[in-house]
Length: 225
Image (cartoon, rainbow, N blue to C red; front, side, top):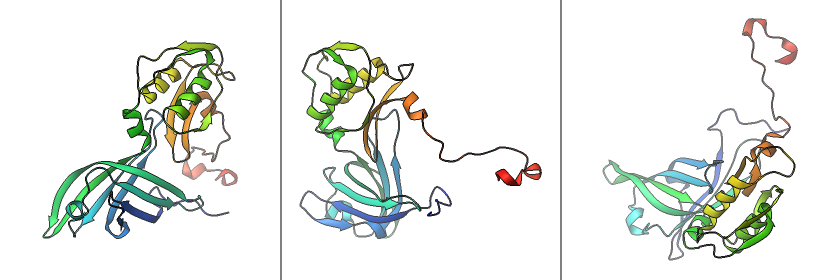
């Protein structure tokens, strides 16, 4: 069995490429100072940011205008390779570090967020399960599919008030009831594996990955350490 990561920063970047609108690809691995990827139960799309040390004035020469893509892959010990293809939507914290060298941060998000901003749901749903409505909206209006979707109970009627798909999906999550679990704590979110429409009860109903026992170090039972 492969060992797990020794600490949170124990990972390896396999690829980090900036794809410009002109078709030019630029390898940024050697210029990358920091990279963060964010998954959030209460944020519909995955996001990332990366600090770039630029001594070639690439922000002007490529140029970086907010229409570029970032293709990158990384892994941690004992885990499979993760590949992401995100779209740059802004730069920030641009500062001169020293002569002929600057540092800036690229902010990226899944392209579904751009599709969402340009799309409105103009369709009536009558007498359908919320999970079926959510699946249809994800497929028809966002051009995507769910990694995990949990079946709901009770039939539902809705005519979205010309909302964006993501706003509609979050509204449906706030009204959904699980067919398996008590409660109505649904969340709509994205991970590196894809989009999910699932209850928190379902997320909690999993086998523990690791068990920890809190007790004084000098009284620790060696059998459980």
